[in-house]
Length: 423
Image (cartoon, rainbow, N blue to C red; front, side, top):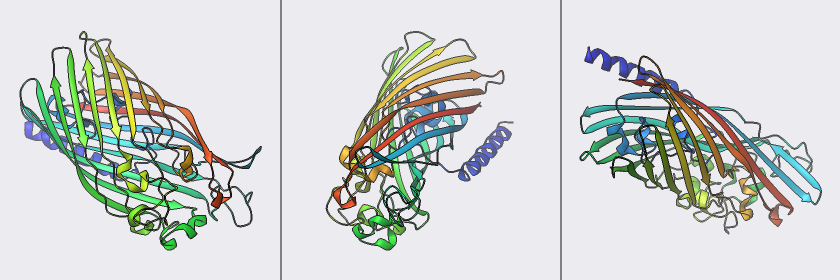
């Protein structure tokens, strides 16, 4: 029987991975282009996860959590709806507006954990990042002959960045109060951009600047984690993922710095969880995302030199600090309620607004709600809702592109559902 159960579990896992491979991980811009949380329990609590071991998403959150998470398989699907707008004002009182057509996405995620012994567990998490995903309507020649988009290009304008990470994980309890873990991060990226014909004169290789379809990039990294039970009420957790050096997007060597390089930045989280009684949980996390690790993202758009050079204009994203606060209340053995708040710094300065029409990741405040319901079989349904308030950033358009003012704005909603099997 144990062997049969294991085979059934593996069959479900393999089938789920196959399903996920057929679905694109897109448009997940919340904390920059990182998600505000991974796993629906975390997402319903503002993204807190550093000191928690309540699901199998340790590969995306804190690898050390798996040894205390139990034997679980989590299948999640998030319906994500961002609203992205760009406005160009060549003169006061004259606005040319463009709204991204891509506004509804299904984002899957999967996680599995299994105990090897009382103090050792393994698992795998499959999740995605993204958010540089826009598809702006043509502006119908309002900017002149042969101009079809708000940045002066001759086709529709848009960018699509998808990051898929597969995180095999192992976690060990050193004793009853300390656990450590490590995840191998197997990363793949897919990217395309269109509509940047007006930038050809600023590129080191105009033939590899825009409208070249999808290109792919790969890399391998790690995530380290630690959790400590300080006492019966308080836990502390920390995780760290160094920068992942990715292979170049060769088809866009004339766009990104260092001939198409687009690395995944380092990031770390610290958090505390407090349980004053058996029903209530309050958790707070601090996360730091170092976008400056990726020169194509971190270099300001004003950097002298051609696009694609070793030192080249980029998106100008700052490193950001993220604060997450979440609470959970267990009504009874079946029903648990959650709420949370997530605040991230806007990474985009006014001086870089024009280039970031492509990637307006400017939202700051996220409000979340969630719940879990455990069935008679011991399996569990989890729901999570997130609303990110609209935020706008405006800045002067460079004189070489005609001057005037650009404005970018974004708001977001998401609703996710997750089904968890307990073994």
